[in-house]
Length: 530
Figure 1 (tube, rainbow, N blue to C red):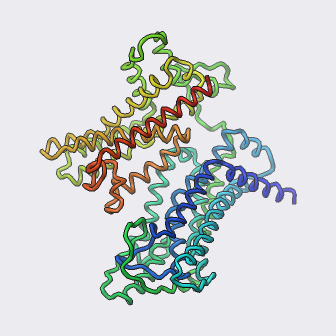
Figure 2: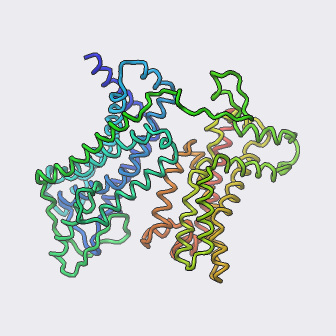
Figure 3: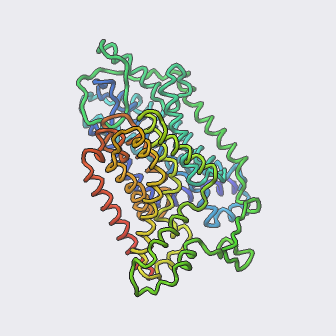
């Protein structure tokens, strides 16, 4: 009994601790806004020019797919990090000294993750009832019909997401930013299997094909000219016609098919428990640098001198009363070295291969594809901008130097712009070789936008996780997406309708605003510490 109470209290404490964080409040606000967008028709399912009548079946299935699409992606980044937080705070070592086993601890984290996502699902489920009431296209609310898709489609997906978050944290090399990128790619694979393998519904965890195939049949019956296209996303237009869709027939076989994903999630949790090291620090590799000062062996990680201090040492001849631009070029060079520091040889080899291909590809389509890849490959490199002083706890040292905002922050920003220009310059060379329009204005804006966006998000969240989550999503919806409705998110200028091509002042204004907010945020931190 005492062991069960301890297990319950651990889950409860973890759930309450995470719901009291600002990040949860932000996600909660986004969930409310997502419900508003669904209600206003900005997010909907369109079968070409048609949609279903807003009855219980349609609204419930629409909300279930919205949950699997959006919370399936962002929910992972929301719940991921709890094991790492226990490790860093020392709580993990305390838990490891109790009678709670590895399996119990990992299962508890999975349940806590699922509880967070379940709370958000409940909010959207209640919103779906309000959506049907507000649209007034079908007055009869059938609760079972409305809630069934959310239970059998959305909740198994949330259980899987919660288990994957535990798995990624149980594997040391997937805990950080690289794991975030891997999950983003894994999510794309899960999405693609439901779209491109319509005959294999059992692997459609997101449920798009499961629901979409039935919707297509009803649309075809109502509109014989319908060709079979279906889209879930943000749309600016309205449907030209509606049809009645009565929902899925939830047979026992279909329910078991969806419940199988909960079983898969449980298997992933057990695998995570086997890989979890129970906060044992002895097998971890402890990197030692000759430049780091070690006071005692027991405090090796806490007493090393981070690279930020090396900058201060190399520019300590600045008297603080002289000109700001004295040795500024040297400071920018040091920031470039810090930005590239730690890059693995295989990352550099991949970056070089992408750069060469973007320059020598025989047609513009392939070069633009290489350009897009070169704009996502260094995502972990860019994510360190604006947060390095917080990660290494060097604020009190850097902020007491002369001109800590103008000199240090602007040098880091300029270093990011220069490195970005080098990494994505292959496409410009390719366009020059093939005598095509260079598009220099859009290219220059993109090289300035990316590091500015990284510094802006780093200043807001004081963590690199925010950029690692939002930037790939922006890249996927903008440059990588072929839908004209989302061309306004194309910061690379790949699409002709992109604002960076037709209205560059929008991006110019955005860059100035983001940089101004980042500088103001740095001023506030300097004022607070000094």
